[in-house]
Image 1 (spheres, helix red, strand yellow):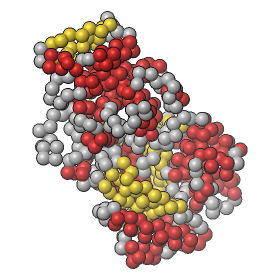
Image 2 (image 1 turned 90 degrees about the vertical axis):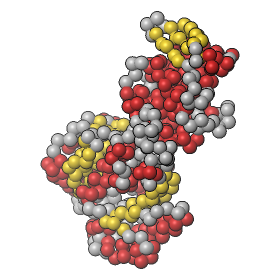
Image 3 (image 1 turned 120 degrees about the horizontal axis):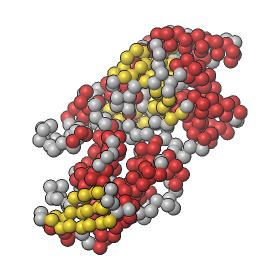
Image 4 (image 1 turned 30 degrees about the horizontal axis):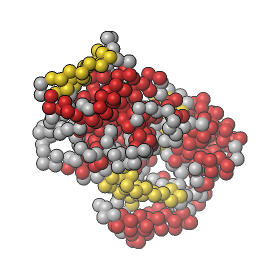
Length: 515
């Protein structure tokens, strides 16, 4: 593929040619970023398909650089020492990974502290790493771009809460619009006089000012930042929600109000252990809930989604060419997985075209899931046969994939489970099936069984493997097999076809046709 021009490779129709191996994308295949925040210092190394990167390395140290900043005007001395030690470690790790030069950015604590420049100088002197300090509006822009990396074409209001600041940015049509920054970070709120009542008055006044600058924002609210994710994880615990994936987790104002009361009534230590939240983060959650309650009252969004992508992903998005930004992150990631792990890379496209007649009326949102499933249908072949179906389901539902709602994760996982077994009962995932409607469960089963049958016709991509004709009104499923492939239609293939027909409640007709 490396030597082929864009027009020399057959297109995938509306999804376009794969770009993960294009030179402009390969340049982003392994990128290291250090994010020096008010509460934590983190290094992330992105790897793989640039449009939907995997996290090759991800380490966070809770340094609390911004603790006490409002009173002293200086970085927390203990946090400063821990941050310097962390950055030394990260720089050595990057050298060991043979990475390009790291990109390091610092946000509110370093930009506001009187000794922020001295800290930057010390880091550069000790490690050779230059820290770029970004202002609040730039922080808002990068966080919003991180959301766009996971949700192409997303629209709404992005709210990124850090330790010492909170940023807002509007996104629409793939672009970042108005953006503002404030001091509503939990570390700053700890210094507000007057206790809870004093904070309530302060938060209300600040948010009203932000609302005047941002204008009406009644679309989706995207929550970015560790404190928001902690609240979402507690919301999952309260609800008994079965899929512990924070990205694309949805909440409502009502559920957040209930979770706020749940937090107030719970023992913080017991709750944080149950939810896997660090003690440093848990100490900030009560302040963050105060901000979130007022934020929802002020802007009244139509719905709320958690984004695990933020400023670090926004820095990667910043480096992408526009044609890569425009791609579907799910499909690009699945293409990369097929090229890397499938036994016959490229067969996913053939399989997609084979099963497509069964889904004539499927909308684009469903077609992309069908495409993703076909690309992933063989990437787990190394797993033990007894566990292959569960491995596929587990990977699809819990993988770091962008552009997937939780129900879509389950649909994708279930279709891949049925790629390897006819029945879905008796697995450890049954509580997740409730995220799908009965019709969606059946569609995932049909897709999985169609892939299971199609995989029996595993041939070279340019050899016709057969064709389905589906007549839903008459409930007739016709299979046309070229004579060149007729020997592949054996007993096991016939049994798999009958299983597919049973799910479709269809009569089967098999016809041999000239090659």
